[in-house]
Image (cartoon, rainbow, N blue to C red; front, side):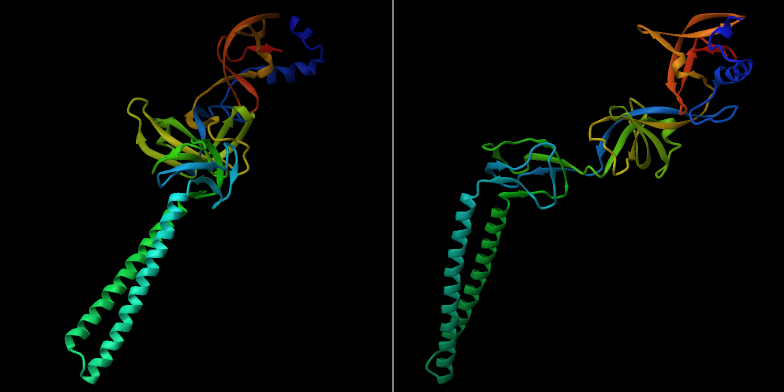
Length: 329
């Protein structure tokens, strides 16, 4: 038979080859006969569970930006320095005003002591004593207000050094030295590279069968990597147009993935039979795909439409082959 010329092996090989090459309708992860678990791939992106926007809290000119995109920062690192001259002057003014207020308070305290002694000797009046008590209380209240003014000025001065609120990686630098920062203006964006996850919209009919803690298979094509991740969160809101729920799958902390990378997750989709052939039996000519089929002692090529790879490296055939036909490499 023509089929014997394909490999030129002994007759026992033909039996093994027939069993190995005959396409089977199986699913990813299936290791036995019959219907097997099916998956549907949901495309999404790698995101960080902890994303932080660093913003200015005062109006000031930017003196320096100490980081660039990609830098790793620790909590408390100085990220941006703003012009502090005006605020330093305010702090100095508040200190001088406080000194003057404390001097007035000390004078009022001394006046009260003298008036009290004179009252005891009978050479002063109760009215003068009451006035001295009132003056001291006013002076003490003035000192308290000036202390608050100084604290306010010092707090505003501290805002000229913008610190990293958390440890992470700089992903966006949105301002440059010389720019004027306004309150609430975003200057930098950070994310935690140790808290990455894949966020992907999943068909609502499939997402309803998932729960927090389930482990799903994740593929990151840019890294040519397949790994397992645990569902962190399922957003309980379906997009009206797409009819999907957002599923967030946590990645291992040692992953080499970066925020924004394309990724996809394998969502269980029940049981469905598939037709699988060895991946290297499928040959491409341009955008067409062919397999070599042995039938009735003859070997010929047949055009097929293929789908996804299975766990064991075989390729799904969507059309062009029937179950039981022999495929030759």
